[in-house]
Length: 291
Image (tube, rainbow, N blue to C red; front, top):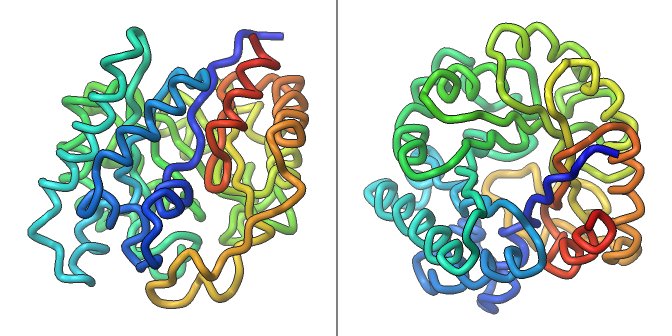
């Protein structure tokens, strides 16, 4: 088995839980306004559990999302806060890396309302600019369609920092992106943009097990970080939902999650972590299994 790089787990759900206030459509972005130290502490907890990488809490720090809630003037401030918290956490863990997270425009799991790739690349440009000078790599997360992935890659690749592409697959069929497009149809995009790694993220672990063999043929390092939701509900695909619209699984504790991860490693995955509802205890179990 190749050496496994252990990623961190999900930031959003855990930060909302630790914050303790009623969920808002801003999700974990609200935490950086109210109690930014919680972001630093969660990064530290993931590092202490064994994660090699801290993923910045910038998934939803996008101008289009902030504009809808009157916070468009806080974009630079929130970006800086997220990077500050990741750097503060890393200070106690020499050699660990920071990945600058770039999430989908408009909404997660809704490629139908995202702008075309050319426009998306322009909207992502300030995000990439804010992250690239302080992050060790950029990680594009939860892309649900070919065009969505294309737009983010256009902005991120060629900016002097490694780029990882994360795509999300159907709850029902891991061979399909959430748009319904075949996962294997990513191949021309991968060849054109040449990211440094490809991952499946924010999908059911069962679906990831189906999809991984399809991305293993792209000739790049690959991996996975699954979510712990029962499914992405229709209620979460409405305008500005809160986390209340999602239900976490009760059968995916650290041991069960690590069982899936061992299967992925057996398929050749070398980048393994967790997404929403996967916490520090899960990452600690991955560290134990792959030590």
